[in-house]
Length: 338
Image 1: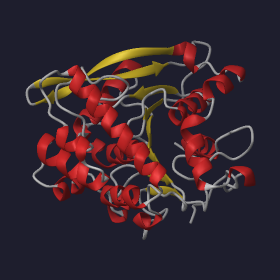
Image 2: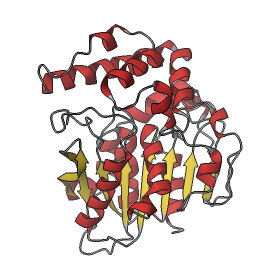
Image 3: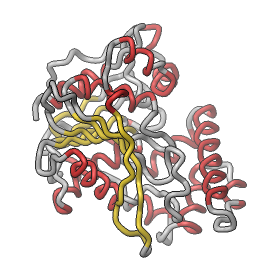
Image 4: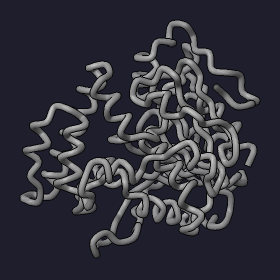
């Protein structure tokens, strides 16, 4: 289940092969120290930006992100916008390391934070939800303006839920004036209903992890907007499906959970018929993103690459005891084609 590639297939060190180890290492690798030792220059070049990203209910939407431009001594290959997963941020280990690798390969990078992530719960009154693609498209366009590369080479990379957003940028962006030369989803949630059920039915450690994350963000939103929200019903739920159902009805514009999930469900025919090129890297042993979601998908049409190695966990793909990422090498190789 892979497309032709100049990068060898993912074969992790046997000590790192188990799915749980791969998934934990995705977020727990000491990536800052490794990139500092390797002389990566992204950290020193990074500048925080506050972006105006359209309107929501008549209110200005504001998102944040970190931008790093290549030094004057090096020309840029173009701009890569990176989008973290649910409850992640521009500093998440998996995203930080990928951004450093891409920057080291000669690209300018913009690490975009979704609404209510990276401690930004006070920036926007209304809550984040996964159907908010319009403001992400605004964010990508704003990053291009900061970069001065509007109309130039653009790639978008996202992880997990951010992978879904990245793929939607590729699908919907051209009609909105944002046309990536490539959008890459890494362990992307393309069937969010299946993802919710997989979390509820999968290892208890993951369910508790995601529920704890959910409750922490509810607490942060409530603290940022005193008296605005009542999350008692959400905090009482112990099922990820049920907590999402209650959230949708009480705090979004959607009438039902099914309507909400359908708004950002991506099917293989949709992806292969995208208005701009796409690529997906996922793992067959991912307990959060069922591999069955990708049945019928292949490197055809607009899908220029579909890699689904047996191992890799969720956003892992750590290949050796130096904790290097196969996904980073593969992404750089894909970017070199555009």
